[in-house]
Image (tube, rainbow, N blue to C red; front, side, top):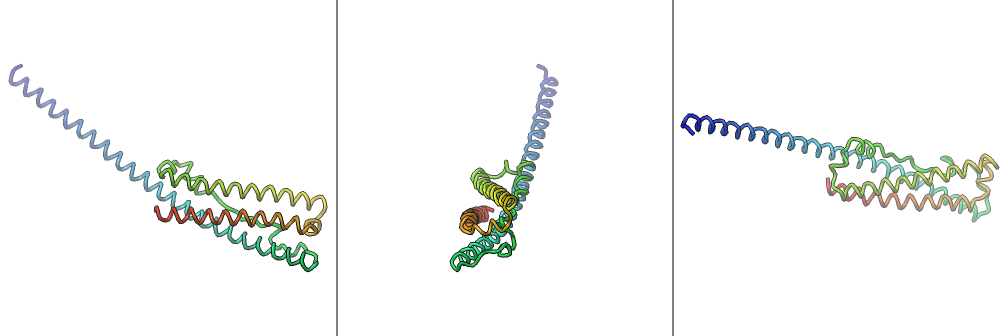
Length: 193
């Protein structure tokens, strides 16, 4: 090869090297930027989920306190022989909390959960499963009570205080478990944030 041809090939290879290097650097910078965006999205989602779980915990705690009070009223009436009245249940015979999973669903739909570490994701999914079981219990008990009210009237529910105490007791138990689950999850997520 002649000297000018060698110089042209060298120059072309030199330029090609810098073009490839530029492309690789641009791709690396884009990847780095996208990773930062994805991690920020995951942090925002985790923050929203944590806030949602705290609100759900507070709602379940209020519901637990209501059920604890109603259970005390039932046992007090049964012990004294005083009949219960529907007015003894201002929020209904059972008053389950309304819990939400909007932040969880939004994070799932937008792909933010994919950027959380697996242990955190597993922990969060388990608390939402516990919430689902709680809501299923609320729906089932609601159907049973409303069927009883429809067929025999409201007074028939309060007349069966022992049965009502058993139902409320199961809510109290489930709510106590769910609150403990919230506390464990929130303590774990807070230390990881």
